[in-house]
Image (cartoon, rainbow over all chains, first blue to last red; front, side):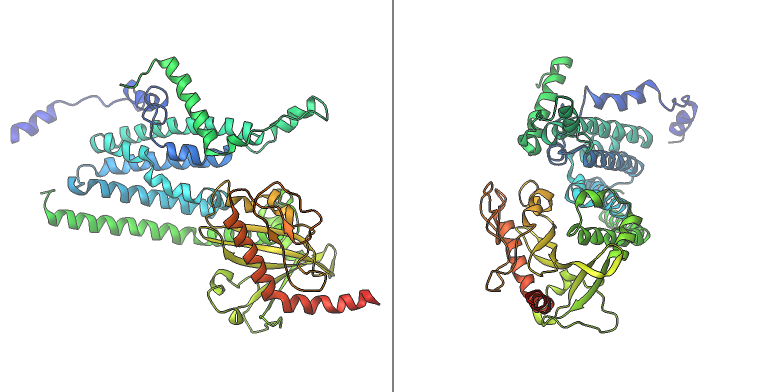
Length: 227
Length: 252
């Protein structure tokens, strides 16, 4: 026993840089190559539901980043104490607490957003990305790394839903962040010219189509194939 | 040791207590802001019945509060249209969702009165809160009647959980505008209110008691119809009392 502890003390690794190459990869990998939405196909439900407009989508993205990064951090801190038999429910309790706090904060400071997103904020709890990262990474890695990993995955999710929302709002409502772009553009071409919006884009079907196109473009570029 | 039942039970209990403290703590700390946000939202909904959504969206919270306090006064009546003057009863404090569970005779009915700019004596419209059931959950709204106590000046509708894109469209200005200019009484003076029809895309311009429906949301539409009918019925005595003297004056 005693020799074991001695050995450990001898091998003192130089501390890793705050953003070393390996840690940067934790953040950048889920952006494209291992994107939770387009490659792992997780979190599709909310990508379809909240993406009709840019603004609520942005709030959703920030909320998910907050929840995934912090829950990864918290679970990683606790990872050595969590009893294996109840680990899922422990993870769920931590995630649910964080989500409820996010929802309470929105209710206090962004009530309109809270009304618009209410159900979907609650559903972050069941977003597969959260539980997926906890099980796959946070349960076996150090807190700081886990937080970076969560941040990466959430950012990967965020840029996808923001892109979907951009096209859906533009083509569906003729606006970006509520600014009526189509109206301005139409007015350049004279009073009778009117850019038409497509009602399909406002429905979840529109999100499916856009998401499919993003997956297509991305896989053509990276050469990723399902096994 | 970590696999023992005692460890698991103690661990779960401690975790529950910590998370519970976190939750109740955040609810406590954020409570005042939330109350403020809810009160502001209610004011916006009331004002929404008389001024356009764009105008409200352009106002800061302070402007909304200032506008509300300078232009809106309120009163509470009972089913017979008599004013309730009991200490502590105010229109802003009536929680219509809670009152809804009581029998109609025991409820308090708040009324918000919209005054002309710069002239607090002149009334522009009366705003009546309503509450009812949609397809999935509660729906509610505010209906503004012009001073003839018959013509609808505007309406705001809101919901707890109607289907986005279908029933949830009752919150859209496009749907709410359909009610403007419609009448709640027919020529004989009987209360008929305004009925949202099944199907969408028809014009009901010449019919004062029908508005175009929402495609795919007939049940929510029926909920709105029932709510309108019920609450205009509850307010009928007040409305009649307010409109009779005016009609008499107009006849002279």
